[in-house]
Image (cartoon, rainbow, N blue to C red; front, side):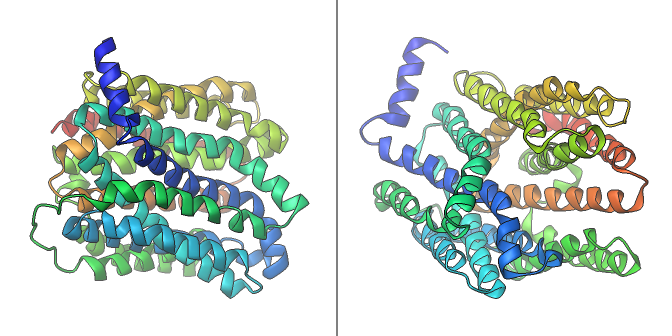
Length: 445
């Protein structure tokens, strides 16, 4: 990138007219990321006080289920009326959820708070994409998505330890309540940018989207439950969930998504593939290192830190090179994730070299930084309905994670030992990344 282009992009992001909205967007995403990362650390204390260990998964399921609904509603409202209503309402709903969960004295109240948080987070994430499309020039968008990536990376590094300190020395309640002032600040920073936005181009309303969103939410909840019950009953529930999800998704994603048709369908499919491969591996890598190789929880987190740093570095690099073709960067990124996940096959067996997790997951993180940001850019480049298409991308992300994390849980329950189960899971995830490599050229607008 030439020096004059750097100056133009910097002015577009941090000039007097844009500084507050750029900071506000990053803060909004950071708050969602911190809440998601930090709650996992605090949840053992929450469940010990309010529920039974058998109920451990439900606060996470409650968040995911309503996030699906919020994602679709946010996209629908943003296409019809622009991002302003969603960016005004979603932080308020998310903040209300923090308040309800933070003051919870019963498990039911905690679940209600988590549902409100998911609803607000889903609508907010989609509205941010629509805002980026309306406010920033195309050449500045790679840099914007680099900042959004950093908004996820930093909470992944500091969220768990901060939440742990707060839970131990104050109370788990403050993991929720402590974010409330920052939600207000972020909303106030974004408000000036959305106040004078022009109305969107009129689009033909899509019929049946809202009922399909609720059906998808029910399907996601059922899949999550079935993943933790690997028996005949769980199998029947999983089949019923798929029967509900498939027709719902046909209304919620662009035609041709399941075949990765060239254009926006391939972009949406790529989002599911990259999320399924990377985030599922991230979820099980600490278990692999602790259960198979006897690492401490602190040591097992080191590869995740390496991956987060690689993600941040690669995302920042691509932001400084807006002229590079994004399908090419996506293909390189998917290759990095495939190499990283395949390398962990040398870690998974009991005779494996555990220290290889650090360099291989750094490679995967570099791939994620290139691939995820490129998909975000390609989404806006190919989209004719930014709200709908952004919601579709978020949905495939969420469903891929729910599906493959559930598969990992089922394999752990059915196969002999975590080494075998996680080896099988890694082979599946490498396959996802390889498919991503294959479809990357189809994402060109």
